[in-house]
Structures are given as structure tokens and as C-alpha cells.
Image (cartoon, rainbow, N blue to C red; front, side, top):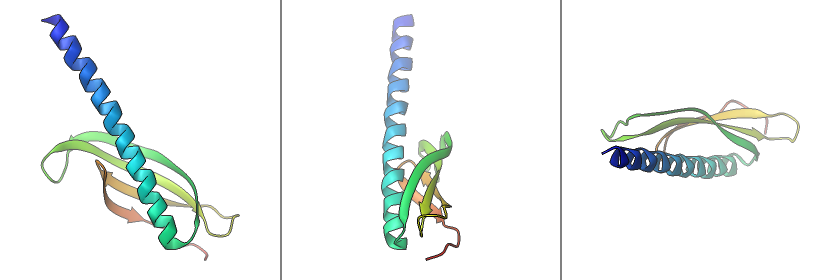
Length: 99
């Protein structure tokens, strides 16, 4: 019985690691799309918050907040925020910036 629980725990850890990587890759893709629309340069993308919970769809998943930094002139850096549920982009917050 202990062997079965060990296998379930190890499988869960591997699954959540894999799901976290998929979410991070999706956030990077969403950030790329945002900077292409704004015609600015992407500096970095980082996860600010992440938690496991029930999504608005009623299914379990990962709710994440990613911060992406961008520059419009090569000197000033601005931060935008991506709010995601699993791989789906729920909202984007972009500060006013120089063009």
C-alpha cells in the first residue's frame, strides 16, 4: 500500500511540474503577442504568483500572475501583468508608456 501512495505522489509531482512548464511557456507566448501589438521590445517574463485552485470553469487548475517587462525606447522599462488560468489568458494590465 505504501508503494502505491509513493507512486501517486511522485506522479502528481511530475504532473504539476509539467503543467507549470506549459503555463510558463504559454505566458511567454502571450507576452510576445502583447509586445508585438504594442510595437515595443520584450525584456523579461517572470512568474509573480501561482496557486492551485478551482478555476472559473469549475475544474481544478493553476491560477498564475506573470510580470513582463518591456521597453519602448531602449532606456525606460515598464512592467505589464498577465493574469492566467492554466494556459488561458484572462486579463492583461499594461501601464501607460512612451511610444
